Amino acid sequence: MAQTRYITTPIYYVNDRPHIGHVYTTTVCDVWARFMRFSGDDVFFLTGTDEHGMKVEKSAQTRGIEPQALADENAAEFKRVMEKLDLRYDHFIRTTDPEHERQVASFVETLLAKDAVYVGDFEGWYDEGQEEYYTETRARAMDFRSQVDQRPLVRAKEKNYYFRLSAFQEPLEAWFRDHPDFVMPESRRNEVLGRLREGLQDVPMSRTNFTWGIPMPGAPEHVIYVWIDALLNYATALGLGAPDGDWHRTRSKYWPADYHVIAKDILWFHAVIWPAILMALDLPLPKHIYCHSWWISEGQKMSKTLGNAIDLAAIDRYLDDYGHDMWRYYLVTRGPLSATDSDFTAASFHDSYNTDLVNTVGNCASRVTAMIRKYHDGVIPNERQGGDRLVVGDVDWPTVTAAAVTAAHAAMERFDLAAAVEAGLGLVRQVDAFINQTEPYKLAKVESERPRLDAVLYQCLEAFRIASLLLWPVIPRQMETAWAGLGLKVDPDAGNLAALATWGRLPAGQTVEKLTLYPRRERPEPAACSASS
Ligand code: MSP
Image (tube, rainbow, N blue to C red):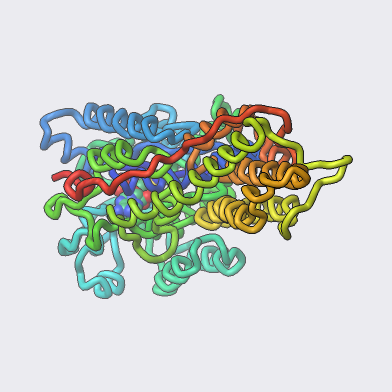
């Protein structure tokens, strides 16, 4: 039975153009979704845009256009970029979708009915850029400055609707105790626990100082606070707030989410406020919040002024210079899935291309197929003699490849994407070592060694084939080229990874082309590779 899987990215603000940060989170989710789909699971991958709130209203005013027009323009841009980068989401949600708006209003009505939301006066320290309130203790610890843009926090007072976050102090602590991998990685979990121990206070649920949002049910002079509106997207996209609707019928089975993937800037909302809302709504909590760190660039925080931002123009140049696979490969293997930031550098990008894609994957593919063409007329030989597998050298290939498949799967389950890639890449390296050990070029000189030569050639190509299946989620384009060149029909959407990755599925007797997957490249001129202004 196919397991249902649900993975989400944050929904991105439409007052910003897409850049590496957005692309990164979406790419790691795409890799995970592809792997799970290929494994036969029933996956729902959600991404989208966060379109309400003061920031969007202000940006639109600055441009002299309606907020909806700004949202339409930038949501289309996000979609275009995702398409261009082969990011295959199942649904792109926009918080201005009427279906989302209706369900948010209905969720808020439920919260009001349950007395989880009340009207009251509130005073606190407010980060205008982040639209977030802080307690006195927290604000002092932050030196009364925004941790994101360093602007001073302001003292703000509002008559508003409030969400009784304080009522969830104990349930949340219990939840964290019972679910040690709810927030991953562990250092992020500890960060949340530390702040949780400072005590929770109720949070505003609505605003009155602007109008670009979903009206508060029964009090249209208030709009629902953008973060509540935004967090609910994970539930509205599955129709959880409209039990009679089509989305609920076809998608509610995906809840709870396996992974909400986010970055450290929005951890508190996802790790504390979101679970408390779900508790108040009597909905199950997601299994994991995976919180990654940030990309910096050439040793520094990305900024327009420094000109080191990896924006769309820079991404385009990397795609042109190195191809889609390398772009994904670099993000996935060098990205900040751990608790430390990752430094995007043109030099490490180039080195990683040469070392891993050219010298390892590409070289193995061309070396093996070239030998088959040279020593066996391009026809895949047989590794068997008299019905038995001929074992040459000391690699027990069926066991080694099965272990790699298991390792890749286990790594994906815990969102360790680099380890999953390593399972595939490790196989490729083993093929190279195996060639050096068994020396097929020497076997080819001795007629009586023919059966052993055939077995070696078969085993190299078969191990490479299995590696290509494991590597497909991260470097799909050239793995598909390889399959075509080997005459293999592989459809990852068929969800048969385990069956395909069984040793011995490579059909002997079929003709293969010599594969050239990743051409060697000179390092581009620094100017051509660093960011645009
Ligand atoms: N709209 C909110 C999220 C609401 S989710 C219910 C938001 N949007 S955002 O456009 O600012 O995007 C934030 C997300 O973009 C981060 O959590 C992260 O996924 C990604 N990144 C933005 N900059 C980044 C880096 N420099 N590095 C890595 N990812 C970063 O916050």
